[in-house]
Image 1 (cartoon, rainbow, N blue to C red):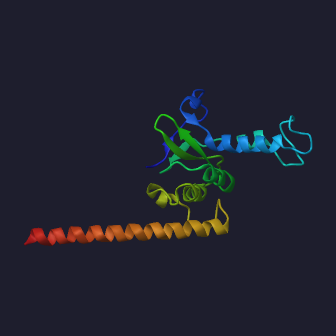
Image 2 (spheres, rainbow, N blue to C red):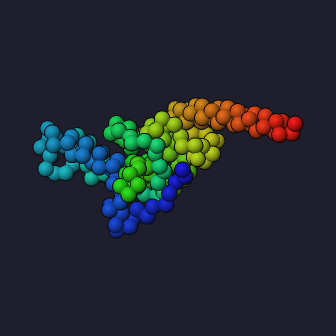
Image 3 (cartoon, rainbow, N blue to C red):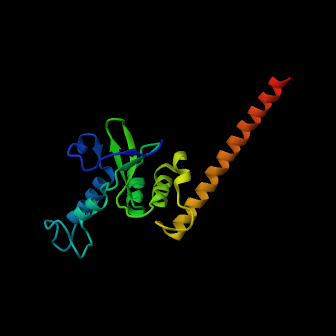
Length: 180
């Protein structure tokens, strides 16, 4: 499935969408702040602990009006990893009971970040997204992450070629059978 359009600034957005990624990171920071040894637990942040719940929440809010469907429900660890290692967050749509990736920033081609988020959350890249990934070089991810993306692309394209080769053979066999 390809991405869907979502107006994140709609005033009724929270009736359908739950911003899972931002909530998890906010709650994790609040928990960390509650144990602040510097007496800043009531301040809402601590520079010494480098704990900023509101910033973590805002940094992990959807910003671009597209959502990319996930195949499965990612666990909390995967959601945190998506939020911390990519320019994406995870959201949940209660209307269709599905989880989605969405960008938390923009301004350039973020296809590599979306691909990496898919790998983290689902273990593979959405088939409909494979041809959208910027391949010239590491652009929105590190060189190491770009290599992970390339290896996954190679794996998935190899599967696709194998499947298509098998289908082609079936079609050719049928053509031979029907020409007799």
